[in-house]
Length: 267
Image 1 (cartoon, one colour):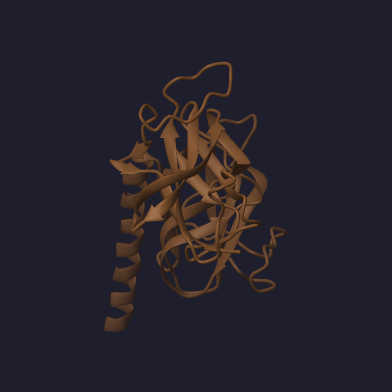
Image 2: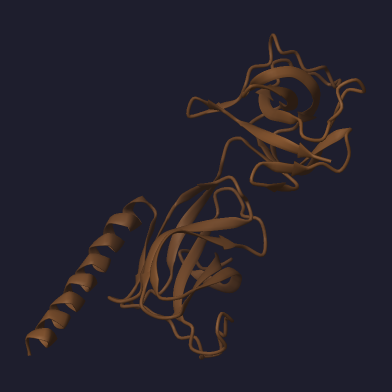
């Protein structure tokens, strides 16, 4: 009898927590969805990896699926039926659940996150009534906003800081986000500091993919060497492709930190 009362109180407490958390988070973007045993928290987020989103935390006592939907193209504040990504989770507590998407996010778009029980084929999303929604509310999916970071650099092939260069003559960038005309500049790594300039590439405003930075003929990559790729503002933008000028083009900084990548070269 006592055990039943404790379980009942726990359920009421968790229900209250979810309801209060929902009201707080919705005010600042995002929310909580689920029930007293299975739920997750998602918030508005500034993304640098454009092909993924992050669920802040989650608690589950069964196999479940977190699904990401697009917004409805006509109805406001409504999710569509278009799934852009999902991830299976097993019982446990989680932080920073990263979900790979089928496409890149768009700046200032709204996505929706929903929780479903993984009832059918394990880790496979089945929306034909098999994987049922887990929710204490009539609104099962919570919305969250996406904002692209003002500046970002990402290489094509990297593993724990190891960059597998296609050849000695260039560095390939997978994704770049630039706030205005900018330069992606390759430096030698001088004991963690920016050393001599090895090459640079002019970038246009906004998002770009597959950017290559050509290196100077006498400053090519060598196996085992270290370089730093840094982002600079282009101080003087002209119609001609002017040269990078380290005396005028200043480092791009976010939260007082320069936007750069440190890479160990593998040829």
